[in-house]
Length: 155
Image (tube, rainbow, N blue to C red):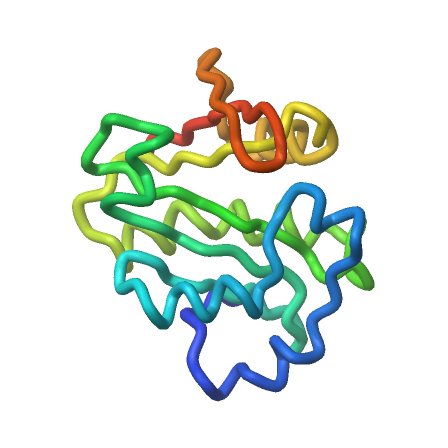
């Protein structure tokens, strides 16, 4: 698996990416995220490609994006994490998350923490993030889709 910054060469892969209504209760549509990334240089849309297929998508957000979740100016926010529903349960999300620390260190110098928020009702995602080294330190926030658990991974 490789992680890539979104560029127009991946437009077809994004158009083919399938996310269902159940997933959209907790995350955002990658097409919407890419529009936001194109308008905001603090957001980077990231694609996890396995065997020439886009299997997982997320956004890395610096600066203002992190502020609601962390006071650390050297933190980066992982947001809108999803796996194409046709590829769920195959370990791709975990693989992408395991590659993420090295990717952040290589491409976002000076960052010492990754932060994410996960909906209280999304127990499966909470378990995945914990397995991949994210820690729940008791921080909670209200988000547009309900109560969120803030988790951190220290680089």
